[in-house]
Image (cartoon, rainbow, N blue to C red):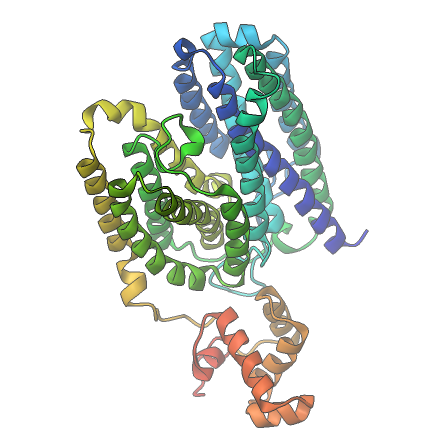
Length: 485
């Protein structure tokens, strides 16, 4: 099978593995919902061990799994690592729900490999989608559909969590809530087995496709943009800390203290669409995404004053949830594109996800936070101010100087690869070639390709957008260094 076919299959397998781990993560909240009130405190320890496992995965996964541009690990080592984690998880779950509920040690030990698997699935997903520039580029590229697939996987797991509670309350858990918890407990075990097979399959497929692209040992490196990465982590953390301070009211999916009621079907449609748009150009999308989010924060600060207005409540809270999940999807992808490290790749792939841990500080900080509408408004305003400070440079200084991608005029084959990696269509590639290689204008390009000048203008506009430039001069300097254009 050709390399491109193997990579496509690896992407499918890694996407299914990521969907599986996200489903397990969200369904765990359904399990917690059906626990007796006296036992729900046990879940906080589970969350602590789970996030400990995520952090441990950032160290362990590069030791056993493939890394971008690095030496491929022996296949038996990678598959054996995944098999060990799945075997440990399934063995402990085979002890039964009652043992899990009655033993803090079992809960803690079980949560750690789940966290490691989360890191592994995130890393393998992005490793399968990652495409590095063919020559000295500024950033990695994940492809147009990466954020869309991640958004779809995330929202599928969210919907499963959202609708599982009422379905089970009217079904298996109608008479005995513990039956519902036991059902979810066993469901997670089978889901873990399936995602383990998918993760192992993605490693095998990537190993077979290791002769080129991001899997090659000589893949070109890019410069890590740490200031932007830290700012993205700050953006995501503001969302999550705010949710924790408000005692999980902003995302009722994870809490029984429901105050705001977003329309999750709308969220499920909007987030993948925004993810697809972000895939065209992550940086450009983020710059356009920030200002509407700041406006949303301002509107959200008024929402506690209108908690008795169901329609306004639903509209604003739906917009906030869309912004939250879009930030989760797009910012994580942006971190991967801006990071060039080898060993800590798996940590970079989960860094935005790790900011979710802040939300679980709600029970800890709750007793120190005054209750009341005026305080909730104050917290939202503070979050909006923090968000604006983080967004200050992007909003007021959007035209950052771009270094040329290449030190000299490139070979035609290299130019062709760059155009493809930027997501240009076949016609846009033809137009871009005439712009770069022959320096033709709109009229001449139209005559050469037998299309109207207006159509050429549209193609050129899309090309500039995908390369994140606004003028022809900026576009040409990406390919020629030191030459006046």
